[in-house]
Length: 369
Ligand code: FES
Image (cartoon, rainbow, N blue to C red; front, top):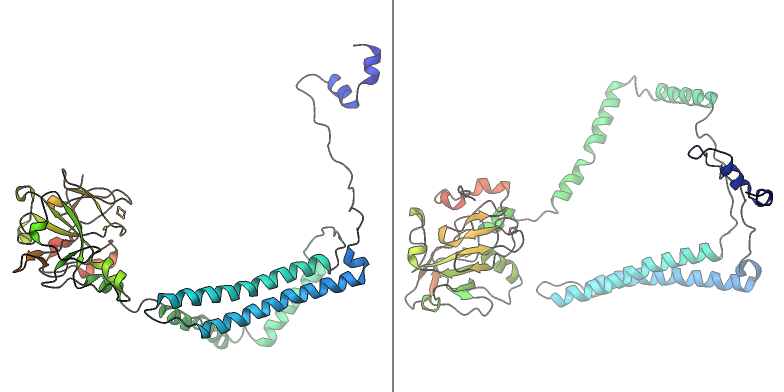
C-alpha cells in the first residue's frame, strides 16, 4: 500500500482498513432532514380561467352523479322485475346498476378532481407529540366525570340505571326478528323432503323428457332421469329438477344386493338413485359399470350402486337416497312413490326427519372402507 493510495482512500476505506476483520461496526447512515421540496404552484393556482374551468368540471362530475342516482330510481320503478320473466330481471339489474355506478363514479371522480386541482396542495408537516393530557387536565377530566355522575344520579339511582341498561339491551331485539324474516319462508328440510316424484310418475330421459321403457335400459347402461310431469316452462323448473333428478342404472340381477326392506324397489336389475351427492350436493354422475361405483366429481365420494348406494370412499356420510321403481302396463318405468328421505347433503336437522317407516334409508353406511 503506497502513501499515494492512502491519500486517495475514502474515509470508509480508512475505517475498514483500521479495524480487525469481523469487528467492524456499521457506520451511521442517518442523514439530516432534507425538508419538504419547494411548493410548485399548479396551473389552476396561477390562471383564474383554468381554476374556473376545473370548478366547472367538478360541478359536471357531481351533476352526472345526481343524474345517475335519479336514473337508478327511475329505472327501478319503470322496469320492475316480474315473475316468470327472466328478461325483466336482466334489464332491471342492468339499468339499476348503470344508474348506481354513474352515481358513485361521479362523486368519486368529482371529489378527486376537486382535491387535485382546487384544494390547497401545500404540504405541511406536524411533529409528533404526546397525545395524553397533562396531569392537571386528566385530574380535571375525572372531576368533570364525577360531577356528571353526581348530577345525573347514574350511580346513585340504581333503579333508573338498571332499567336504562335493560331498555338498551332490548332495543336491538326487534331487529333480530326483522332479519329473521329475511330467511326463506319454507323450512329447509321440508323443502327437500318432497320431490315431484309421485306414485305412477313415469321416468323420463333428461333433458328430452321422453318416457323410458324398462326394455330400453340395457345392462351396463346409465340414464339421467327426471319425472315426466316436470314442466320445463314453469318458473321453478330448475328447483324441481334439482330435487328430483335421478340416475338410472341396470346391472345383472345376481350382482344386485338388496336389503329385505328394499326388495321390490328395483325392476329386473334396474335401480334408481338420487343424483344429488349426500356430501354437499354436487351431481353424482360418473358411473363405472364394471364396479357399479358412482363417483362424485367434487370430492370423490364413491357410492356402490350394487349395494344400496352405500359410501365406499370419500367424505359423504350417507348412501344416496333410492327411488322405488316399477313398470306400468305399457312397460314404462314409473316411481312407486317419492323418496323415503330428504335428498341432498347431510345436516343436523335431518335427524328429526328420518322416515320412521324406512329407518334403513337414512342409516349411515357402517361398513365404509
Ligand atoms: S359433493 Fe360429492 S363428494 Fe363432496
